[in-house]
Length: 323
Image 1 (tube, helix red, strand yellow):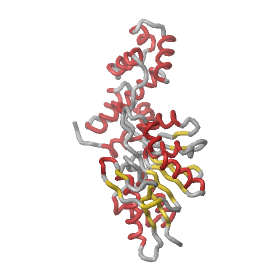
Image 2: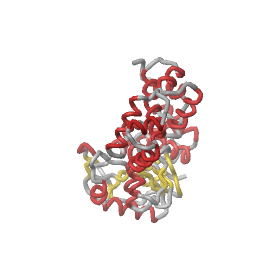
Image 3: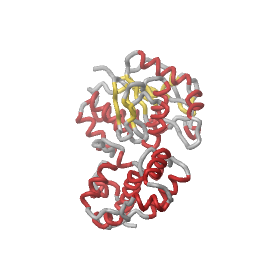
Image 4: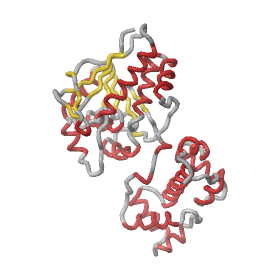
C-alpha cells in the first residue's frame, strides 16, 4: 500500500494550529504503525507564494499539487466580520478547492473552513457540520446544505466537514482508522491523550454565547423567564405581565426568535443546570428543583435531549470543582 497523500491548504489568516494539527497526529500514527507501514505523505500547499496565518505566523508552503485528501483549516470568524468580503479575498483558495473536488478526491474542512467549501459549491445538497457557534450562519449562507450542528464529523459523498478546532483530531483518528487500522488509531489516541469515542458536539454548546435573536419585546420576555427559572411556566400570567394576549405573545416571540417562550425557558433551565453540575456538589434532584422540575427523571430526560448526556454523565465529563 502506498503512502496516503494529504495536502493542507494554507491561506492568509488561517489558524496555524489547524494547519499542523492533522499532520502532527498522522506523524504520530506513522511512528506507531512501524516501518513496514506506508504511512502518510503530508504537505502544506497554497496557490500563493507566501502565507501568514492568524497572529502573523509565517507558513512555509508548497505549490498546489495532486493529493488524495485536501484539508481546509478554519479562520478567525469574529463578530462583525464581513464573511462575504473574507471569502472573496480567498478566491484563489476557493478555486483550488473546487478544482481538487472535480478530480473526485476527498476534501475535508476543519471548523469554519466549511465556509470555503460552501463558497466552492461543495456543500450543496450535502449534509455538513461546523463549529456549533457558527452553524446557523453556515446554514444561512448555504441554504442548500443540511447543516447538522450536533455532529463532530460529517462525511457525505467525498466531502467531510468537522466541528471546531479539536474535532480535527476526531477526523484524523477516523482517517488513521481507515488507512492504518483500528489498533493504530486507538494507540495514537492514547499516546496523544485524544478522546477517540466522541460522537457529538452537543455537550459543549453554551447557548449563552450564541447571538440572541429578536428585539426589545422578546428580550424582555427572555429576561422575565430567566429571572423566574424555578417558577411554573404559566403562559397566561406571562402574557398578563406584558399586557398582551397569549396568542399575541406567542406570535410576536416566534416572529422575533423562531421559537416559543417555553422552548427558550427549557434551554435556559438546561444552561443553568449545566453550570450547577459543573461547579457545585448539589445533587441532581436539588438542581432539578432549582431550575423548576420537581421530577428529577423528567429533568434528566430534558437535559439529555439538549446536551446528549444524562446529568450525572455530564457532571463526570465536565466537572470543574465546587464553586
